[in-house]
Length: 449
Image: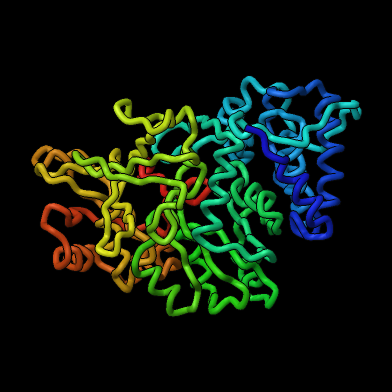
């Protein structure tokens, strides 16, 4: 099935509207067409894969230009009928090489190939692979996920129904563009014909004034850590903000309460690369998505047109020829019918025959008034099989960085947990740190604990 190319449609309907930062749709289309012809001049044709290793590390004065170059290359691939393969430039050389393997061209700077007289596409095939996105690699090496144009379109439509859509939408993206969360902001904005405000990395001192501005973002994508940093910096009642989408990890109840007190409207979001970003928002599945819990263990199963065609699926379950995605996440339905993610199957700790979900213990620890963040994992134990271990970041991070505990004691936290959790779930060891190991997209790297 064919659809009008998103950028072309937006430029035709809203030529003077800002597309990426201060660049209008008419200007962006002209730049993209030039980039597409230069890709053709470098030998790229329809169906070829193009690795986009942008934006490279750049001083602040050049960062916006480098980010715009990424967006140009991304849309140029779609205009030419090629497949975009974003590369996380903050990864190591071996990981970058693995992601770019098999690409006809690696774009790591300005396109300087001669302009070729290429046939540019006015439509996009919704069933064809448009972008290959690699997972963030929190539990294993990053995996390549082939997402079709139809996956992106349905994801954009489902998100718009969940959040509403303002014709003057300004969506601030401070997530890595090589990962699905950042990419979705760029592509959804083109589908809607609205504005994407792109920061090449999250910086509190840059995001905070943007959100405080009267004509600031109407939407922003964050992870729990970056939301916490903004609240710590004094974010209150951002005047233009309709929703702060917060995903990448479960959002602690204490953090949600802080945001509510500060007048920051938070939409907790659960999603994954294999489902083209959003699966649920505010606990409810997108209108085009069906979510079930496996009866044996509560694993979250996802079906619908946002799921990548080649995603790993439950072999006994397919719907209308589409896969039913086994997410590896464990969930539960709340009394209000909202989906709550309680952990990862791979992270489950079995201590004395009791299954312990780290996320449940982390939520209790993070509810303590002296705790900023917590991470829980299992450690081999000759008596219990595994023992529950916690690493805690005190609210006073400066003391923690100097080797202190911010006034916290391990026994105090164990007693706090014992009053709220079953005995098997209470951490047997509590360590203190000034930060938790996280991926470049802000997700906890539990395997490094």
